[in-house]
Amino acid sequence: MTELERRYLRLLRAYPVDYRRSRGAEIVGTYLELADPGRRWPSPADAADVVRAGLRQRVRATGAAGFLPGVRLAAALALLTATALAGVWMVLELRPAPTAGFGAPTLGPFISLGIGAWTAWGLAALVHALAPGRWARRAVAFAVLLTAALVPVAALTGLPRPPLFVLLPQLGLGLVALGAADGLPASLRAAPLVAASGAGVLGAILLSPNVFASSYHSSMVLPTAAVAVLAVAVLLGAGLALRGDLRGGWALLILLTPVGLLALHPLAGAFDSMPAEFVPSWTALATTAALVTLAGPALLPLALAVRSRSTPSAGPLPR
Image (spheres, rainbow, N blue to C red):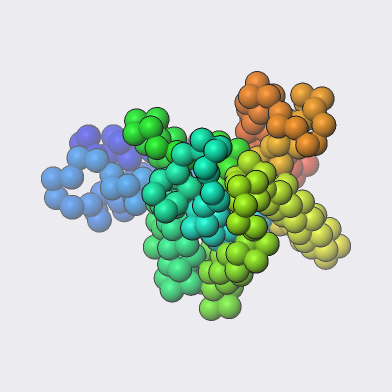
């Protein structure tokens, strides 16, 4: 057995045990036939394909037929929200408030390093409009990585960055957005770009050029976005459920973590017993963020397990 074959077999653990036994040799053989001569490691695209297909089979084995469509629905809503927020934040970066007397550092003509991340999100919206599918997911992944990189880069360079309560929901939305569907109609492909542009224009109108209104810390953008996303998800879930379509319910479960991160300040304020006009303590913010990050994803396997117990096993499905 070659090293490449052994590594493909390790990746195959993403599939259910019964499926691996019945189809594992066939799957690995197909990838080995397509691999370049002398290759020792699966390509990143092949590895992602194997893991994604394996997880899909595990979900199908639970009988949760609406889960994968729910992932795609949640991804569409998450990408719309992430690009719209990026449009608002880009306007904020381009219109720094006067800092004389306040001691707030800036990055030249911008407020912080965030201008790079928000530009990447705008690029992701453009790529999604022009080349959906793998290229769009790559653009979103690049925006997610660049957003995450702001924290270490700011620490190393001493340059300002957006606060963590702005970056965390953007990361949560971006990770969900990686599940975006292929083959969308042109109108839906362009929706994130329209959302980013429209939100940027609205932000330019509503954000005043004074030091208090042009600040990440004073903005009500995130709580408003949390309420909007939650309302849309609940309405979609209820409307689809009336037709026997459960994908809206799965989308709502998936979006709970990003929504919780968007509402981090109000939730942390409630945890810290602070009035709405005060900033919660760092401890309250960190604790609330950890609880939201852990609780949201924990609900998904729990819901899948409940669904699996209530659905008779149908055996392995075709790949």
